[in-house]
Image (cartoon, rainbow, N blue to C red; front, side):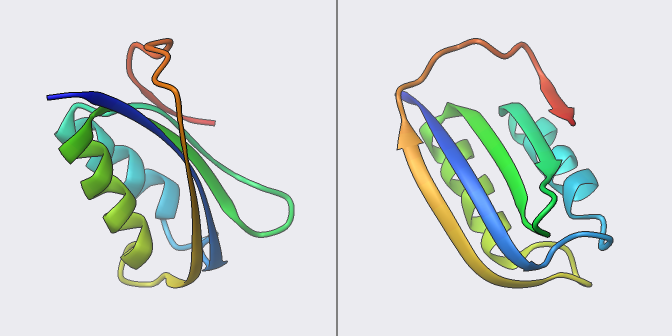
Length: 91
């Protein structure tokens, strides 16, 4: 299976609802590397790298988010896989 990279921007009510923590947990359980962080404009930004099916499942998770989130939009940009991450971090 091929490895891919997704750069994701999530907007809506996504800060203060454990979005980053749950995304990290989801990523680690799927063996996806990268990072997630809050942006000053209220969005959440993340980079996911790993097996294609695992990354796509994580992108799908971002479309729903944790129970208290209200996701309005998810902008996904697929980029070249770099292999630069050894794990998953919350920034």
